[in-house]
Length: 272
Image (cartoon, rainbow, N blue to C red; front, side):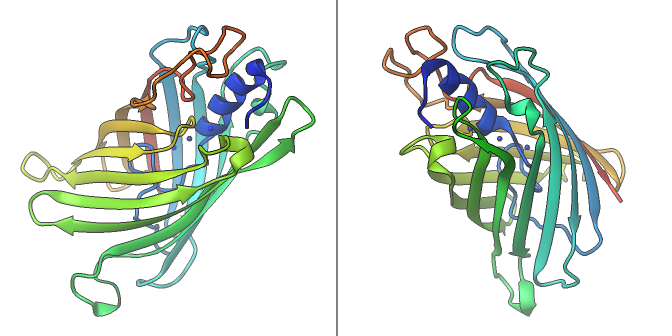
């Protein structure tokens, strides 16, 4: 599912850890989707993000493992609400530096309308939500916080042949994401590849902002059944970010991309 300026060592861990502590609502590859789960739809997600490189000279790059539970809770076809909770661990061994595994629970919620809602033909999708709602906030302990508290809004529209486009923006905690780096745009394209199979879905998404959430992702999913699907993709963090020696770093004089190294992701979704 994703990130303060403090001492150099803390910053490297904080920026990446907060950014990738994904309390994931229904997503594209990385960013939230404009889709909202229907009433009594329950999903379990098993996600992992495996770094292409775990070397620490460019900051900390721990792998991430997440189990999430989300459900639709509003009995309406035109206005839907989903809520979720995630349990996320990094498996990183040095808790003295990477302390976020102490508080592995994160929450999310999303309210939205589907396309053509209320019988209005051509009406786009609308969604507003919040995620990365962490439970740990100890600024006196090396500045540690998991409360990114990202709020966002999205508009989505499906066009004939080309697929669906969505766009919007987000705003999060300045202390968690960094001063001047706590907001940005969100955008995506996705399409079911019916020419090949109705089970195949492809997507590309983008999240702006010079924090560890900023990224470009590409991937696709295969639906093994109506209940089980698997997303496979690649997440490249801050591809347009230019590092410099003035950047905070892990005691290395800077040159740290806030998001760390790119990651390979698999996301198993089981629906009930």
